[in-house]
Image (cartoon, rainbow, N blue to C red; front, top):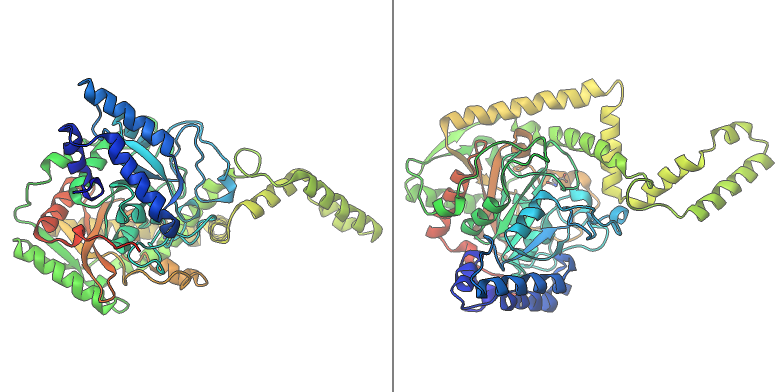
Length: 513
Ligand code: GLN
């Protein structure tokens, strides 16, 4: 078997047994990236030199029988929104195109300590705002199953990377679905952990109360391995929680007895694609055949989740993104062009005797802020900043932001009540398989609706996992989502593994031309 077909777990076994070296494994993945990524566009940057250097070091230590880390020699791709010291962290934005991170994110520190081979930085929607990776300022990413279609987003680069076999593992972030949704659309396993389980230190903030970092892999077993490497309390992130990190990968093979799954009545309404519904219902039957009981439940406030999310997320984004002003970080407008523009305007106003216009003329500083932000941010980011600023402004704060916070609490209470009756909630990840590139770019609302089934987990702070459970007639992956009570990642992973032992959907690979 080629190293490219091995799971991360198998690759580790082969390397530890001395059958494969980390350099061979890394080189094989680099070659595959070189051959295919021009078509897929999963990566913004690949650092072959650094990757091979880490791999050589791991091989050296293995040869000398010195201790190595948990992921020693395994290629891992990282979404280009986590800081790695000295490297560009672009967030797929012109704003940070040349900005080098001054420190490592905690997740990156942990990956380095585990001796993972950091192979490259993956594409995303600008500042993780989007559901298709078309909002990247640099290029779209394509779905490896059909290159005319989107891979989902915002972690589309990481999902496509794992689906295309460019790396067995990748890191993504999920604010409203950005790990689970692209995992579902690309046919890989992706998990959004409970809020606070993985440190956000060094993650460039989009919506701080919703953002979580999580793993992409081709199986629950591998996702468990990556999650146990990156999770845990971090004094550098005040929202990170003192919760134990169980040995997820060791426990993964223990099936769950007396498992009760909840099916959400509201998830099977109009708008759900018939093919997706049929595949998801069949997946639920697989669980029943494995001994699970299934119960219908209701999440009555879930119909407000998109509206609530699109108030709270833009509010937090507008505040978080205020720091990009041309002075502190990143892109600054061309100041000589700006001064010339200002002088021209002044001359024109003076000639017209427009004293009011002259009095209202921006100072150079304000103009610098305005131009830097106008030129540095793309349209979706600007839309979010405007929405958020509006919803937070005096007079509207109570009507929108405060109201949204109250509904957010009700959404959480729905889940709390549901989890008194069931162990996990099962349902679709998205209402339809991957759509065509360009299909929704002119319709932001349609794009927002893509997250119908995923955003409520972020609003409630609970964990969720997505993995393939079938394919459409056109050959596109269809995902299944499980959601669990806070800090029950172990249950989510073991339930996913049960399914993956009984089926082989997760083993299918796209045939790249
Ligand atoms: N698609 C959602 C949005 O655009 C979610 C993004 C995310 O999870 N980062 O906000």
